[in-house]
Length: 272
Image (tube, rainbow, N blue to C red; front, side, top):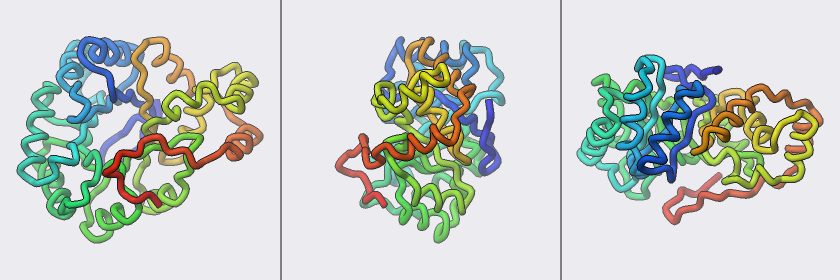
């Protein structure tokens, strides 16, 4: 499994997303993924599943240094004291003494970004998270974080897939050597039934979803965290790494509509 090097950590390019996985089903999914060779698990305070992920990690027997765990603080907890409280709670539920990456899950209109990032940087200094980053930040917010506050941002986790163009923010991030971690990399399941992707898949003896995933992973500085609860889906996502797309495939994918954003909560920032 290839990894991206960022701010002193090694981020496996294909991880397991766990949004909407809960309880025993979540624990079983994480145990299955770790058994298949996944070493990057993505969770968040808001997912309410850290308590299920902790025991799955503990049961795996995988050395802590060989595992990457990301969690996130929810946008209602972005005051310094609330961040610390949320972080302590996440760590306890995950049964870990540190996480590898701690992210601001969503920006909040009334957050004081310097104080937020300063708190995250202190957690990093204390060795409780190895790196810090953000999710759902637009270019303006990223500029503030990186250029004004000079925070060591290890990634920006955003919605990215074959049906959504993210060129402007990708270019900005590439210029700052900030990896893009793509969530909803299969367009919330829509990639699997896309006729263009199915035709490309047929050519390569692969599924449409595998084509969509490989298109992302072929891009410099991009990682992806598809959610997959079943072992066969997790195995299929790993299989995407073997697909070899050619220029004709990329042209066909480039011609797909690229204006389909599926994650649009009311508190989203204004997208570029």
